[in-house]
Length: 402
Image (tube, rainbow, N blue to C red; front, side):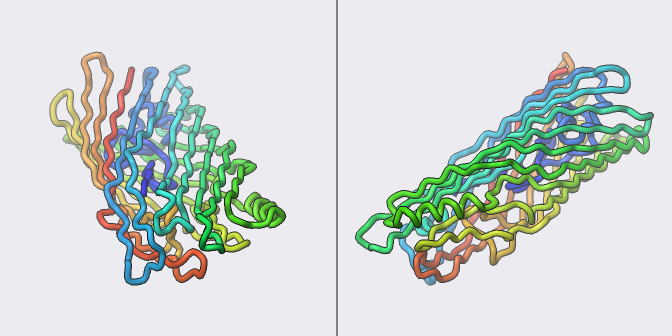
């Protein structure tokens, strides 16, 4: 089962790229163009125009082990999936001593699963994905030596796909299929501040409002044997669902401190109003729809980072991450199979002679056992099990132009 850990939820998420390991050094470091997205107020610390391009290559390593003692459907486990590349771009322009303008193009949130149509859980999910692409223009103003303020608008394009097999009542017929696709554009408001307590200590505070895309789902129901008039009723009911096209509001906070020996410490925290997320799994059971809602929970994610000089041109970095569960064990589904998340990572930054910088980070994420038990269902059967080696490894490379 393919897992796209694009940051916190790494799945449905907390929404940022970082130049440091496991999404540390986000909201208060303010030392690269990434701050145009992470904390627009931090752009006032940049003294020249900057452009950053980054890519995060992520590979899911685990597999789902079916508990054959209780599972009642044949077909085996879901697929593990292919590596995923997540690109991003950030730009900051100096207007004058006090004003900065920025722009970012990112994929801050996403998750997905994609399995063969004959696996054991096909009547619950064969494909589920949510990808968010965000274009965010922003501005920053330095109020005084201690305080900078920032604001932006996030133009969030979301695309969602949900597919399941449909069990036919006639055992002589092959499975039918349900495919739902939707996309739309929503707008989030970003407000931020950077408080510089001293030359070596600063605090970043960032708020992102909820954005919800207005969507008109494209629904295909095929080879189910359901009467045409009942099919139209099912399509109308699915159209009324709040499919996962909403990006929840977030509160983000960070602290940066530089020690006398030039070592740097950071701590970042994110709260996400994830209980407002919406539907991510839709099934047809007989002539009815099963679309669980109100499954998700608000959660916090925390990261800590340490940077230290290795040589005049090299800086080493390490980081750690923890994210709470965003869904309880009893509500976990195959389309959203994450547990709590731990992450560790290490990286290095190289300062080139022309002032450009290159960051390389290697990250490892542990997503827990994430046990799933669908319970007994007379049509779809029961699927139970848990993940083995539920890890993902990520390689992130960023280049910063001065």
